Image 1 (cartoon, rainbow, N blue to C red):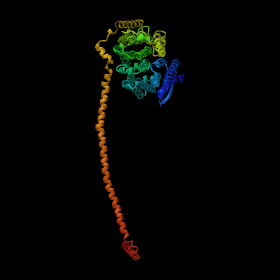
Image 2: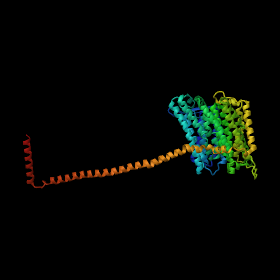
Image 3: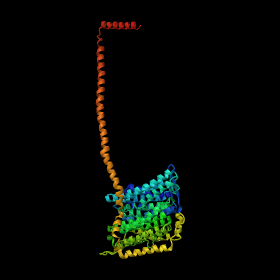
Length: 615
């Protein structure tokens, strides 16, 4: 079975890379190849989920590359593969032939493959590599229509925000390596660290998870991510990148519990995000922005579950949310394609004109609202049972977040089902490739409810592991269900008259002004520092370098002049002396024999005198 696990991650990564690299020449074949690959990956995911294989390969000395499928990752790989297949099937109709289909479907497969690698990674090096590929492909997908500067800016914002938080994972890996207590940097060995090293690892993991899952204060990047194609939003928000942080916290729940403080920080951040981002969703007048804010809020429940140790409830919430949110985004994309708008007032009657989309969107919205008997109603109670056992205040905040989810979900439903002034209730059918995944996801929203009740819940608890989980009482199911129904009915009856107070609306409508705050606190000071350093470089360093160069040139010129004069004079003096000596030496050379004889006699006389005197 190890070969199947390698194939599970290698298949989408390889096919996705080939499609993205080859590009436009294979646009016509890309949808079929991508959907076939996604379906094959789903089959492989189901197979490995039952067999639980584990593989390892050499990567660096002492740091092997490990992949494994256990209970939690087994549920995740099936969820990721199933949602990917549904989204890609819908994309066949949504991404037209005029678009760069090979690039789109290739990047989507790469994105999915990176997520599959993330959830099956057993060591930090593999997790980091998959984490990086997922971030890079998300940037490319959000900026898919890169010729639009606004979309490119949105992709950059999302990428830089998540990358800043991702530094926490590098900090955690560095601390684990420096401590020498985590062995081969296996995730399961991180709990072996102690003291400050353990706290550093915990803090790094939490920061990276909050950034990836768009929890406070990183939530604003998810708003900008809406600039990408609707299928990208459906995949990114439901079962891949945005839930990767929540999955990591659920996976490393023992590390949070060991720290003594990590669990509380995570739990309260998730609970507050569920409430505050729920209010942000209520204030939105754009459907995709409403759904984006609801993603932050719904993932807040998963983060709350990780902080309180309710791993089973968090996992059930993750799976149910994946079905509901991918369905909601796909329908929103279908309406955008058909009507050319995302604004809620302009979507009045959309559900009446597109009945299949309208009915399936209703299922997704009611599931997000927590209306029984749909899956998120029961799953939320399973995780809130853990919050109640941990802290009653935490439970109340979480329940308030669940109530707010009913408000924004019912608000969206009210707009899309309201009749318009000039009625046009004729159904406009969707292509079959679009209807099939919508129907399947809607069915999943209802069918997954059984996973929150015995005996299926007990089986999930055994599969996920982590010890006995808190069990919700009957009154908890009744209370949350009754609140969801009552609040939804109230919103439906009052419609747009149910408004958020202006002060809160101004604050929440722009996503708490978090992006402006980030730009003020981080971007602008960094840019000013960069400008100051650039000015220092231009005015000080450049001038210093230019002055040094000019001085060197002048010194070289002076040295050249002085050396040339000295050397030339010496050479000329030697040459003149040699010429004079030559002229003097030529004088005795007359060619007359008696002069040579006289010169010889004189020379021998001098020699004789010298010999006599020396003796």
